[in-house]
Length: 343
Image 1: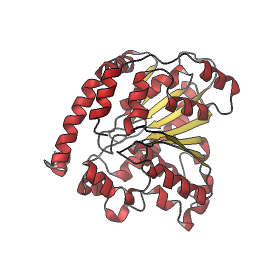
Image 2: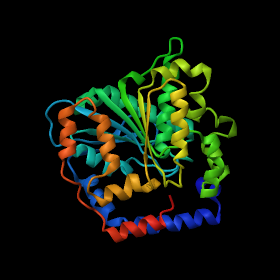
Image 3: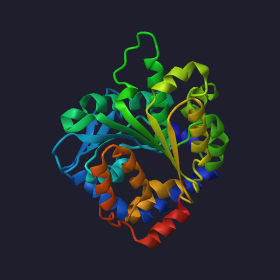
Image 4: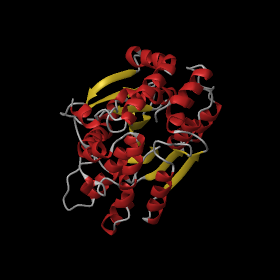
């Protein structure tokens, strides 16, 4: 009810809702197959509690091979800060588990159940759970990678930077450390919300609701990692960050690729290690949905695996020689879905 009151009956919201319904129907063959895996596979441990708040749950995707400690991905899903859900990472979890990697998909409170500060706190608690407990599930605590996608990339980046700033504080007790994160991968994220307010308004995420999510106009700078890393007071905190990889499609209309470009420049100027990978012509959903559902060799998956297995030449060779992923949705449906996508 609170959310509907914010949204009102704006034509942009109604148009995008209808487009979303059409989009979901066209991709339904793939969603049904992934959903079956999510609910019935013995490799998926659903709704593990990591905190006391509502939505403080995570899903674990475990490889079939139980031998030896596995690399771990802590994944923060997207969803425009409003419709995020841990199950959105099911296909990524499945694909990475097939490559002998454990994936923890972290859920968090969405708006209006929580605002951005709550989301960052939830993500931090989820990451803490992974860092401190993943060994009991067969994970290697020395090989933990953090990934965020879309709004999840914004939340995960805020969380990582906030944790680094905490670690610079006098006598600050922390439940986890940025030093436990081997690398961070941000996929299709927006890192300067000051510059995105008008863009999102034009896309149907109205200024009033977005400012409410971000806890008011006065908080936009605080929750803009691109702005924060340029502040002299965060210089030491930036030096604590792991290597950062920013991935973005140049055809992304939801969050323009410029968002990753300018953040990469800001990080580099602040002394952080950062790589920017751009995918020519790829949209917001091409990278994370259409391409993986199409099967074959998926660029995004290839690059994520290259980061995770960078220090393991044997696994890198296995990745190169792995059979193509199976197609989950017919091509004509993927083409139509791309045309009607509201993202």
